[in-house]
Image 1 (cartoon, rainbow, N blue to C red):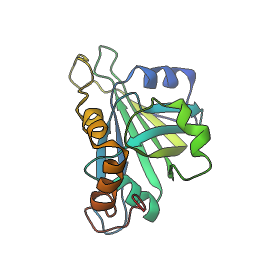
Image 2 (tube, rainbow, N blue to C red; image 1 turned 90 degrees about the vertical axis):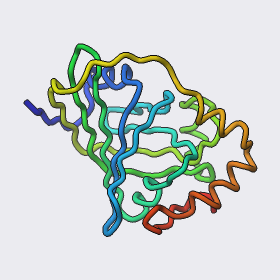
Image 3 (cartoon, helix red, strand yellow; image 1 turned 135 degrees about the vertical axis):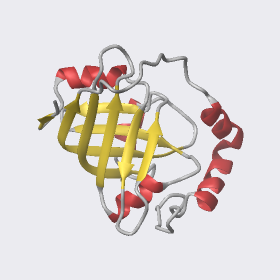
Length: 180
């Protein structure tokens, strides 16, 4: 049975810390709904009502575009181990870019990975747990490393050029503010 909470408990925080993948959902009026998997140890719980993740340069930039148009965001964590659980965090998302004064405070909390384009904050308004009993059992085999290797090979100038060319607008033509 689903249960709602106003803030993250220590148990929720411990559950999040054990997860190797999470999912980010955003939407803007007239645009496609974006649902994106994330990994690479890029998520941090900052306090009982704030979660942040380091967003790396990739093929799309839907979250950045959607947050500019509508800050609603959901993060979902799923347990694929014997302890079945799904945790959804609902709230308002916010993008912190490298040129933002808060970057210097937030960035040291994350691994030093190439291609960081923003830190996405979720200001949690509510959260929900549900059983997750229908999810498969799966084991963690390790990180792929292909994204970070691709970003390292591109180098800072190549990543900046890629952002200007490929991350300036969403797939629906919404401006992202990335690569400016």
